Length: 219
Length: 247
Image (cartoon, rainbow over all chains, first blue to last red; front, side, top):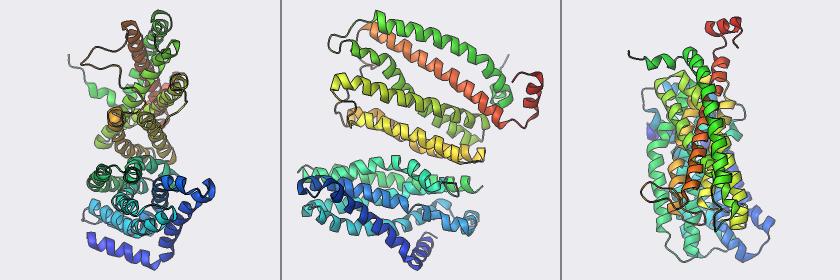
């Protein structure tokens, strides 16, 4: 069931590749806007880089949340999924994982390239990538709750940002903090451990909360 | 004689009970407010370090405490409403949110007013200030989610889920001072050691805290009454009240 839903969502995403690319290019454009707005001063860009990349990743991940359930909701598939005897939490976990594969992984792969634009040293690039790799699944998992709650509402897109962005903040703090700690020459593994803890907690609780939200939204 | 407490979980009987309780709590809160402000502004001594500016704590600290406490209460009642499907608990949670958001805003605002003379800046990105700001966002998110949903039952349940998820933030706020101890001072009041302030200051502050409690209870009960009327407007007992001219 878990593998099936991932396969299905990936297949659907591959049939509509432009959606995937839009999110990725949104990420790239947002990151590229900052040097244009604050000036190409390399020292400043280097200190800003972790924060900028993380904020852009947050926004890109959030913007694509609408697609997690809405297509299935519109054509009625979601209702059938709710009626099925399979665990809904597992299904949501699968959908969140597929969402991460489609939006999170491209961001993680792209981040080092953007980091080079900001003149980050090599080991900082590695930390940035590792932090994003641990952190972006958390964004998809928490986002699933917001996406499920705002399903089919007027102005759901703006509302989901209001609900989800405050909950993203701890990931943002420690994700950007890990890279900053590395650049300052102090240990960064505590930051990564905390993001790992967020990931484990959200794997356990977020699918359950999102499944509950789906039932609320569709009853 | 055993009192059947569940009787008041019905909106109709709670409406009448709340109607009797509101004036009582308004009365107590006004008395406490006057006493608390008098102690705070005329009795409590001037702080030797902070001068007169410290007196903002008589509003700031109660507001900050209430902002966090009300969120937990709101999440608790929303959770009860979600788990047991009781209408009144969810209405109560909805009624708490605006008061909580107001106290959060007051805490942020008075904090800024205090920060300017003390720290020399209106705002610092300190962990505690930031978490209070996030708490404000959580209240706003809760209220706008409920406002966006037309069906009140779905609004109740959706709000309950987001409130419970946000509860994770409350311990982060509380422990933030210990975790990322930066500019904001540690808690001045604690149970296991003597308070680091004069007794009259503490008395004034505690009276103000009680006044904020009483105020919150009064306003929340009043707002719950309004929500009950709005949602139950199709029922016979509301029509009955209307006929009697009680509304």
